[in-house]
Length: 247
Image 1: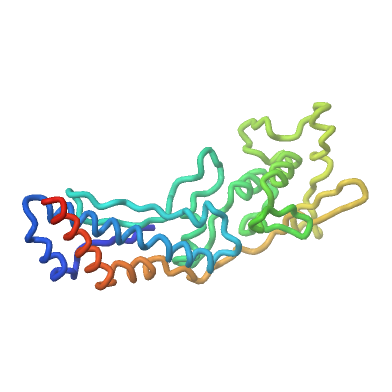
Image 2 (image 1 turned 90 degrees about the vertical axis):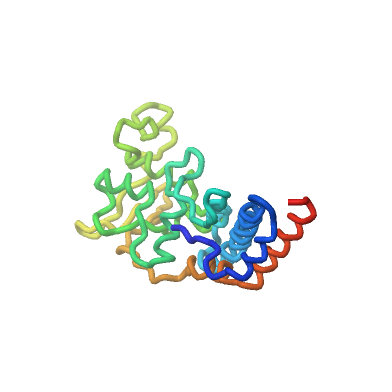
């Protein structure tokens, strides 16, 4: 997901830079475009904060600037398509796309493992139930998900050592006994957890969520890119800087 900022339609403002010497006009334009791209970040973050429910810092910082350079007079803002550090989860682009373009959301890593293990039926997704332990952002906590996947032996089927085993240490944790698939007849309803005399529904299987577009990513960037007054102010600033430096 990417939106560009360039000099198209800004001929009058660009023309004022031609009084500079040598390569100075090009370097000045690079400065202008990069300033414009930087200005797009704050409104994108504000839009994300209004669209997502309690967005994480990772979501609010999901925007990346591809800076203009003398060989390419175009800056761009994009949603990151790489995961966080060593995370096995999704890249931000995965959960931004349904909000920008509408349609289905992608499976989370935990949902993929549950489906591979034959626990999550095709066409269904998993959402936190009333017994799920949630983090500060309303998502099921990482620790609780790991316990559930371990107990159901649903971690990556290529021999992951995170799955519950018959060892004394693993048995003492009790995850294998605690988590089970709750069914109505043959229909899987979700994942329940029983600890002592308490049983809670921690994951609910729901039909495929289908989103209508809610986050107008391209419009937000376009409003910055087509802001003549802002563009001209940065041109004036670049011109003043160039003249002060004797370009």
